[in-house]
Length: 164
Image (cartoon, rainbow, N blue to C red; front, side, top):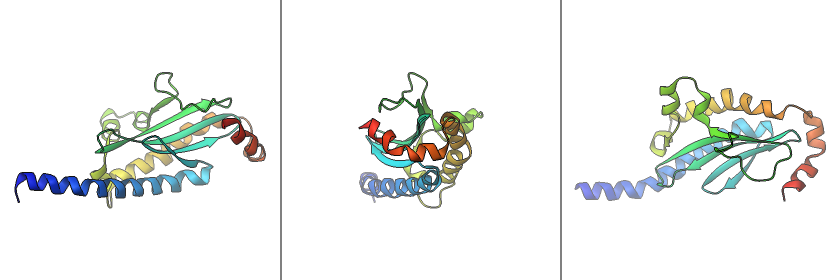
């Protein structure tokens, strides 16, 4: 097989790998966040899980790269009187998931996530899901202090009506 043929074959496989690895990652993150009242939605070039309470709106977002070879995971928060606009890196309410780590080398390894490395029985995917569960969830939970879960569930129709 020539180099050009190999590149062409790789280009044909990549969309399948991308789709499969994203599905695996989305399902595993969904398993972590859904029991915590996060709702998965589509947002631009990726999936986002949003939790809305009276105290805050928090999210975990899989952002697909514009080149189609990798993705990033962002997390963010907005006060309870949210406007429906996604938090921004500019105002400090949004950050990369990897920024929760103190070790720079580990943060760099878990920042840009190549689809090929997330496919199959992936140690990288396992590390990302562990980071979401063990670091992102507790970090985001602190923004939901205030009204208890019962009150939030009771008033959920009002909260959701506010966004649309």
